[in-house]
Amino acid sequence: MTPTHDTTVHTHNDATAVRQNRTRDMQLMPESLARAQIQNRLTEAESQRRALHVLSARRLQRRAERATLRARRALAMAVMQ
Image (cartoon, rainbow, N blue to C red; front, side, top):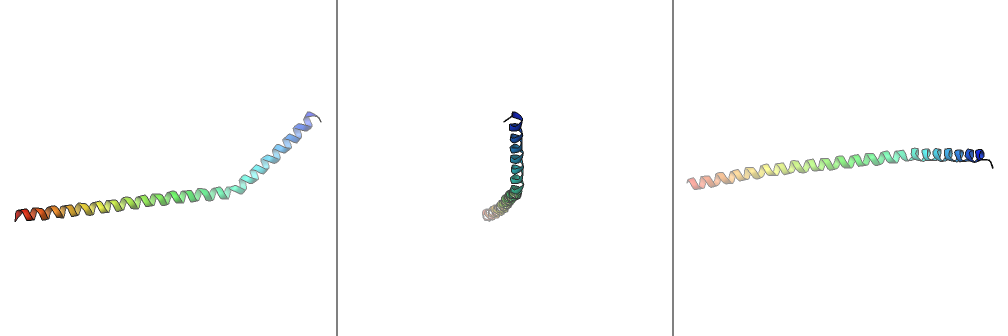
């Protein structure tokens, strides 16, 4: 065989491999897109959970502060009498 023939066969095999890789990549694109969307949804859900946790903690803190003020007032009223 001549070197040009080997190069042609090699180039043909490379082209076939590239085409097959491209086809496989195209077939896997919906799967990759779905995976990315799921990851985005999970990240968003986690962010929302953290935000709800922070809001709940703030509400509890305000409630505790009001209870503390009521207790101080009650103690001050008891001492004044």
